[in-house]
Image (cartoon, helix red, strand yellow):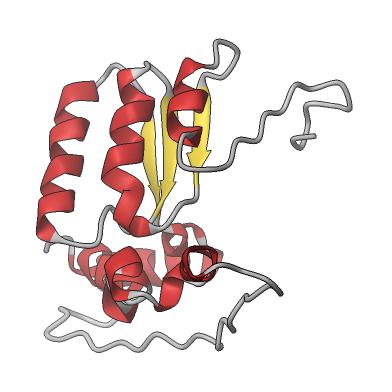
Length: 170
């Protein structure tokens, strides 16, 4: 069950290559949490929003410029009609919020330069006995440049987002 909905809540779980369209066709779903490899984000968000459903998609928007431009196009199409959010959860950490508030208030003066690091543990391979090459690739998509973009696109985008937030610019 989903937190707060109780034991009798209807919860759907779709998997496989047709799952985005199955979700889009599901009449009792109005919000979709999409946690798929980044490569698929533009296609999945388009399918979900074309069906009139609200969406939360994990970051990043896409793995390349073409995909990002598609996401911008989708955003303009749904503007004001649906809720869509992308998972830059760093902004919701209390320490980050307080630090950014102090920086914006000028606590240390004008910011002249930013420098950051992104530390993460090894995610580890998630192979299962008997996986086909395709299943292995999808299960370990984070290590595939096509599916993830690479570590800068998939993980370091948090630091780039934090820079933009702190600097109030791009």
